[in-house]
Image 1 (tube, rainbow, N blue to C red):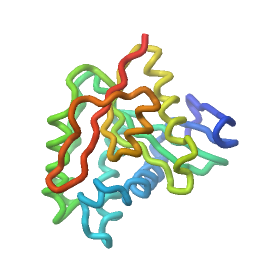
Image 2 (image 1 turned 30 degrees about the vertical axis):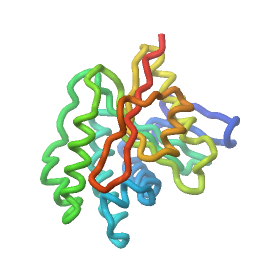
Image 3 (image 1 turned 45 degrees about the vertical axis):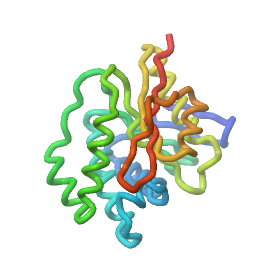
Image 4 (image 1 turned 60 degrees about the vertical axis):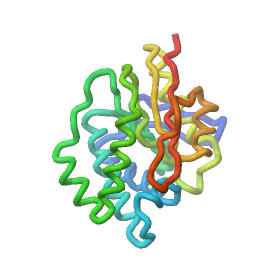
Length: 211
């Protein structure tokens, strides 16, 4: 694990550090994101089957985290060397390359749940802003560390760099709890919520570039 761009803080939890993820960290990133997202309503909508949800989500999120290793950047929050949270970003200041073989890989990962993942992708694409920005695609905190400010720490770490170049940021908040978290960190609602058929609303949010 690389310690490039490391940031240590004692204001939230002692020995919490943020590092840029390296190739060897991808399994940890995927595990963190899967564990954090599996209980939320949108993931229960994507995969109603309790017995297969984590497996399907792990395979799906693995596609995204590996694409970020090539065309984005990921930060991991660690405590005493153990990864406890992760944030996956994609710069959208230039056209983002497509995920190689994405239709086939998505079908293999999601199986019978593929139509709902197609719907999610379509809704996200319809609402995605066209102005240049960095996209926070995923942010997850392990359950034992939720509610302790680790998500805000990850956001502030990324925002420091974005503010140096006055770059805006975009994300999709998956529920009202995360919507409140992002609002506390400078994000504003961007238009109406994203609607899913018989599913929960998702809230597109935008953080303007800071001069």
